[in-house]
Image (cartoon, rainbow, N blue to C red):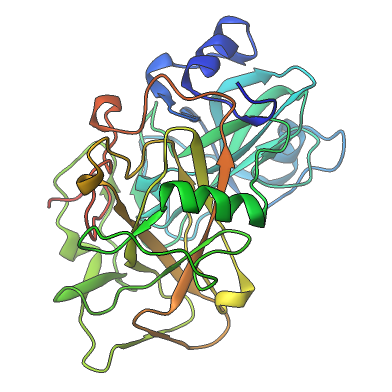
Length: 364
């Protein structure tokens, strides 16, 4: 046991038993996170709100609601909704939490951000918080039909500060070699890759199709109860550019992959930084959690999974070139080694992704 760290699988179960997490589903526990569940209480809002200190989300709903939205009706593209989550918290003073989109919702550009009573920040739960959980949801690329019990975002609990320092990132890299080439070879440590986190680069040349761009005129409805949607109804494939360059246009939403495979050993969790200004004026992901065991294998020759990126440019065109830095991985220690790791055993949809993989709702 270490003194500080992300709370692992078995201790999340203990938190449920102790009443710190209420209405949680044991089947939704991941190695160092918990998937959160939507209810059928959905409100169409006139804008995005952050609560003032002491202000409840219920008060915000009363202030900004346009109408109550029937869950059986699709969420409109660019519509903004508040949805109550099934879980609630009664955290002790020493435990805080952060949240992120799940991989599947991130890959269809369904933006989900947590809100809690009295906290004027998204995706943060202060230590000792007691109250309900809500999620602000915006389908940014196409209409989406959700269903009672769907899981859009996930929460990671912490005791103390789990983040590694620059020195600790280097020492951990020397021990575990977090990055591998696409053919599995270890990538030696260097300042190019290691700093306050681990830098990964974009792959624009390894395959004939190097990514997907969401259709700007896609009005097909993505139904989360189906697993056989045709990708071509929602995305355009991106062929390998002849000059190794890809132009990001503002408001484009792209699915790309990294040129390196990443390893998350059992005693570490990781999070992809949402926006790193040193890498460029774009966002490289909307689903940032990497649980212990992602890309890990006892067989050294099988270690490493690529990271799939959800990329959006900001105010102007930005030219991506093959091998350019694209994201920053921030590693965190876990409080204990999880009893279960990220793998197919936990019904993890992306446990063995070796390249570009769209969300679970699409045909291969």
